[in-house]
Length: 347
Image 1 (spheres, rainbow, N blue to C red):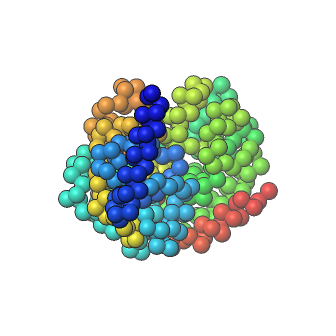
Image 2: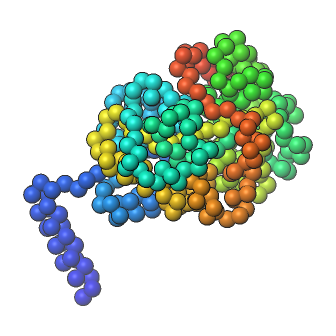
């Protein structure tokens, strides 16, 4: 009898939906574009239940992909998650629009340390989502010396035990830091010196990988590799033999934020979504799922003590003072593209 009732109820719902469609009543929607595996999907369901706004959700691989989409008109996305230097470039090229903060009262939940950042100094265009650092994940059974310098990635005794990231900006940035240069240098000679060092390193590198670097290090296919801090938290949980280090030369501190593209179709809905994502109870659900660090103060306070006090997830002020935010590289992008091709095509 219950099954028959369910069938009848489903049929009635279907008829009602058809009737609403026939009357021209369409459900309000927003289109959201994010990095892959970078949200707790339960929060999308909660947003739909609370607001009645349907979320059409899509993913992409990297900032270069999303920049191309923005340049082409944004494909009618309403909210896009992108990184710091891409935000800076998008502001310059007028590819994104200011947020009406009157519609986003949860802005007050953002830690003041994560407001007024260099890529959006007046906080007009972006709302922070996650942040973190970049460092070396290593196997404590294989690497017994202290991991204090980027030099260890060039140590020949670890031949075929080193994994590098197939990421132009991050990998070249590491080589620059090792040489004592800024990760944001515009000096072509410094960039080419960083290239030369990566080419020298290439014979001892096991592989250049993307997201699959996580599985490889967890499986102990290599002794060390370049990873982002949030991934490090996940990987160490999966394999306690692993640990994470930020070298003394410094590193990148990155920020992923929510922005509204120029092609937005439902700006009010987009701002409701951004406000929802800044809510501490929603932020903590995303942190639990993703493992990255949140800029929402109350959400940090909800975390277990071991995570809240983790030097990986929430490093000390001393460590953070020795970090750089990536800046828009558009003026030297052709140089980056050339030297990256030279690195990846070398033997």
